[in-house]
Amino acid sequence: MPSSSPRRTTMAALLSAVVFPFVRPARAATIHLPYVLDDFSKSDGRSSIGTRWAGFTDRVMGGQSNGGAKFDTILGRRCLRLTGRVNTNGGGFIQMALDVEPQGTPLDATGAQGLEFDVWGNGEDYNCHIRTTDVRWYEQSYRATFKSAPEWTTVRLSWADFVPHGLKVPLNLTGLQRIGLLGWMRDFEADVAISRIVLF
Image (cartoon, one colour):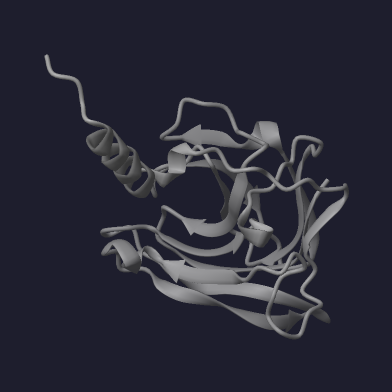
């Protein structure tokens, strides 16, 4: 069998880097605990770590849920509020998510025990989903469920509370990329807000 030419080998390496850029491990940023991801004190809409929240629904994949996220004040506290109708016909979620990659590098949360956040809601159950550098597909994530109440309450989720979906690897705490709060996979009216979120 003839050996590959140097030019062909170089081209193959270049194509691999372009088509599969995720195979190169990213260097994670280090943190000091407690680490405030957001306390909603900034007036420019950015989080405490400089990234932005995004709100979206299952309509990005053809679903029929309606809703969105906006800044609000509830019981005297500035917050981000997610409202809408979750429809499981063709989808089943609305979400507000925070990119936790300041300067484009994932967070290293190996020293933390989990996530803590202050939540107000309409008494329904909601989901918290985490994406890491191991996630390669939109259906993959690490998921935990929490209950809301019509008053500000503090929710603590340890890393052990997050169950992998679509993945066989355990939660990679050196590569956190995104944290999302969702109205998830049942037909209901969602109304939930967050006023603080930290790694503890």
